[in-house]
Length: 107
Image 1 (cartoon, rainbow, N blue to C red):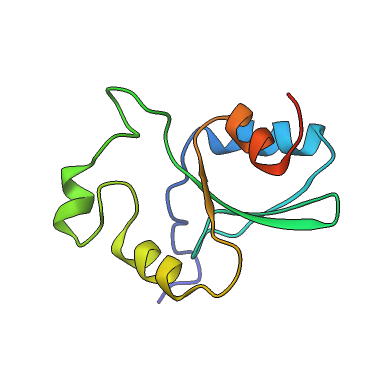
Image 2 (cartoon, rainbow, N blue to C red):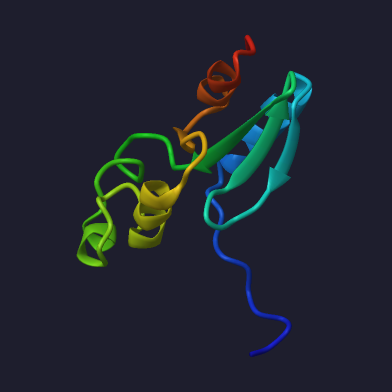
C-alpha cells in the first residue's frame, strides 16, 4: 500500500463545524474512523459523526449506503461500532448550531 494513499473524503460542512466548536472554546481532533471528531469541552468528551445537511444533495437516506449494509445515514462499519461502543454514544451533527447545542454551548 502506498504511503501517499488518498485520505477518505470529508463532508464539506466539517470545517465550519470545527471552526464553531473551537470559537466556543472546545478542543477538536479530527479522527476519521470510527467517528469524525473527538471534542473536549468543559471537562467532557464528545464523539461526533459529521453528516451532510439535510436536503436534496445529501443528508437524507442514501440508497448506496443502504445497499452496502448501512441504514442510509451510517455505514455498516459505523453501525457496528455504535452497537459495540461501551461509552457515550456518538452524536450525529449536520450544522455548527447542532454541534454547539450538543456540547451545551450557545451559538
